Amino acid sequence: MKLIDITKDNWLDVLFLTTNETITVKGSGEPYEAKGMPSLCEEFVASNALSIVESVYEKGWTIKALEHEGQLVGFTMYGREEDDEDGEDADDEPPEICRIMIDRRFQNKGLGTQALKLVIDELRADYRCAAIELSTDPENARGLHVYRKLGFKETGETDDDEIVLRLELGAPEPEKPADTGVYELADTEKARPLFEGWEALDTGVLSCLDKVMGKIYVTDLEAPKSAMAVCFDFLFVTGEPELKLLQNFPGKWKLAVPQNEAWAKLIEDNFPAYKRVRYAMRKDNAFDREKLEGFVRALPEGYELRKFDGELYDICKNDDEYEDCVAGFGSKAKFLELGRGWAVMKDGKLVGAASSYSRYGGGIDIEIGVNKDERNKGLGSAVAAKLILSCLDEGLYPAWDAACKLSVRLAEKLGYVFSHEYDAYVIE
Ligand SMILES: CC(C)(COP(=O)(O)OP(=O)(O)OC[C@H]1O[C@@H](n2cnc3c(N)ncnc32)[C@H](O)[C@@H]1OP(=O)(O)O)[C@@H](O)C(=O)NCCC(=O)NCCS
Image (cartoon, rainbow, N blue to C red):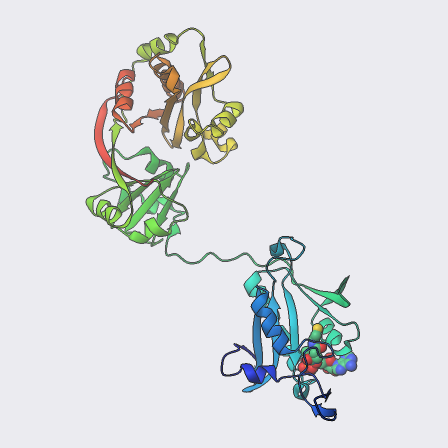
């Protein structure tokens, strides 16, 4: 038994499949009995002609002919009608077997049962549904027998004069993700040599290698020749350039840092990205605590510094300006465990913050922001100094990576030493 397409070669034969034994034809002459002629509405099923036309005007139905040992034996129509007439979201409804018929010559040979099993498999695969429904005339003893045999049960509902039956399939199996050729590397140590030698290794890479946050993706889990570290909005690509790493990893990229020229060229050739210079500060600064405490003390009157807590997490999360202070951690619980941050408050409102953009084994990477109308008052220096001091107290290194020269100036004022420029690619 096969479900086959209805085509220009077989449509007429499909139309002449019928469940009628005889019908009385009343033409211009004497009425006569015609054997095996279809009629628009047959005893328990619409004609195939009607169903085929219906499938043109009602969207969502699949029509198929039933072929057994090379012979056309029946017809079926199934699916889920789009735009449910009650205006309800049809996606929540189980799909239906709207029509099934075996031509009168082939009935009672087990073919209807076989065909129904195929249709059930099709619907289960196409809709990943937990149930399938159909309805039939309560007088249709044979149809009901077959449906019940296959596990359909009356729901107690009716549709016009027909009784509704449902086959429960159980929860669909979770869909297997397609193999994109890009895999998350659980044993991140396998990728560490690929990142080594990268000038002043970025904390974002360390976050992933140290398994604190972010993920490492590779195309070969055993012996990777290339790797990509994804830490929040930053991607770091290293080793042999491989386009599919950037194309197929589960996420979207905003800012990519290539380790070498070949990766940079691959990005330039394949993405609408523009180059932006970033500034790395050295990661072995010896800080002058007294100087930093001086910045904290210089916080102007009317402002106070407040340590990040759950409430400040929520405030930042819902504020476009400060979202990046906390969002990389993915959840409040994770931020409260691993994140660090200080806020500048004025009249109970957040006007500036220095926080962990990300966390790695040895420290944090600092994210800083001050409201536009509150700049140049020393708030940035005060809040950054407070964060740096609290990190040093805990033995965490407060790494600084600057997106612009202004950020470099502030870092230098706080005691950081400039290390090097590097190129990043940004996608809008
Ligand atoms: C309903 C239909 C699709 C079933 O296809 P089929 O190939 O005839 O069915 P099968 O041969 O696979 O199975 C028929 C079963 O019904 C049983 N049966 C036959 N006549 C019966 C009757 N009057 N009362 C109860 N059971 C009956 C058979 O014994 C057989 O049961 P079994 O498999 O347990 O031995 C087909 O008969 C048909 O086209 N009927 C007319 C149109 C129709 O009713 N379509 C469904 C509209 S909802």
